[in-house]
Length: 180
Image (cartoon, rainbow, N blue to C red):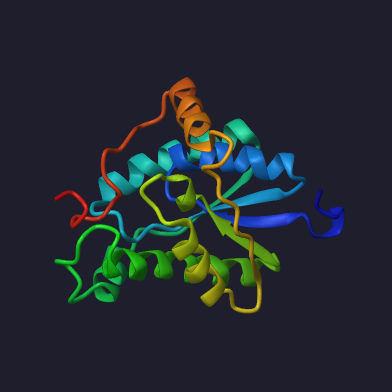
């Protein structure tokens, strides 16, 4: 159980579907999650808006604060320049994850929150150890809290909640390169 005086944690959320169970689990663990929606990787403004709308529903359901960054796709394209033809789960994806977790660490620091994590790890398509390594490398002196949200049927639980809430369900990670 988390001590009351330091119970806030910033959770980077890639989408409403993936964050549903992680938010619930963090609350069960005694944390007070602050959800951070920062996803410049999303290929269109429309996709960004659909995922943000789903994220707002999840945050209202859990009664947690949501902080959403503006849509900045050019920032993502600059970061992954030269990596466009990399395979899924390759170097481009590592750079994308690093970009988003770096922004999450900056936001946590700006807000005076000493811990951060991400809902990205709930996906069976994401490498928990690699994401943990990236989170620790960009931590800016904060604590990256590595929780494998897939454990204990987390992926099933988050999908069930998304169905219950009628959330928009995307069929690709987010960038134009992952649509291939």
